[in-house]
Amino acid sequence: MLFSTTTYATVLVSALAIFGHLTPTVQAHSWADCIDWRFKNPKKLDWSDKGGRCLGYARRYPTGKAFGSLDSADPSRHYQQAGNPNKALPCSDHHHGKDVGSDETRANPPSGAYGGKYGPMTKTRVGNMLCVRWPAKNHAEKNEDDTIVQINFAKREGKDPSQQELLAEQKKNPLTLKYKSCGKATTSDKRPCGGCFKVPRRKPGIYLLQWRWMLNEGEWYTSCADVKIE
Image 1 (cartoon, rainbow, N blue to C red):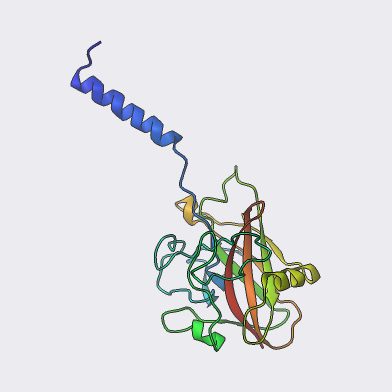
Image 2: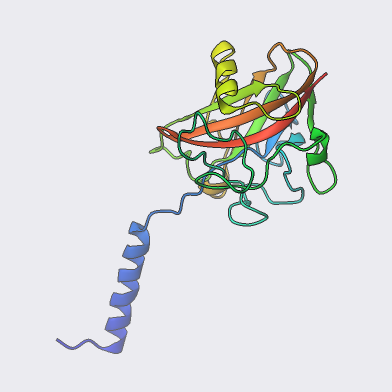
């Protein structure tokens, strides 16, 4: 059977359209960008850049980057804990992990990971409300499970606590958020999401706050921040 050039082109375009429709959307993995999000209107929880501003960031979080854009460069913020996630590094060192992520190693002093080209450190008080923001990265769709986000707090002088220590604190003071608490956006990849919680009772000092998200059973992604409780 012979096809004219026009007919062949029509068939090819149709085939490509079908293929494109069937090809799944590339799904990146999320991270926390803002640790202390302040809404312009506290009665309207708008996680978009128009709805508020960030006063405290994750460790070594570069300023001036578009929301949800740190997927493959600057470097990537994806850190997936490798091996047994309950014994893995709680924060990326840019060397270990199934996805190594960017360097979130504790600075000495901790304030060295903030300011200048990085966002400021979070400062708060016991009982205050902290609101944490993250990009959906295509994981807040109707067919996606509403997975959990753990907020883990712990302190160890001179270095970060282990993941096991963080989980021990989580058992004492469980803090979890719903992943799919999101606003609207032009793309599902960059839908802004977030959740709020009260700062648990702690003595004044600098604590590790770990944002820990379970995408699938046993598949955990983390972001780390230093929080100064005054």
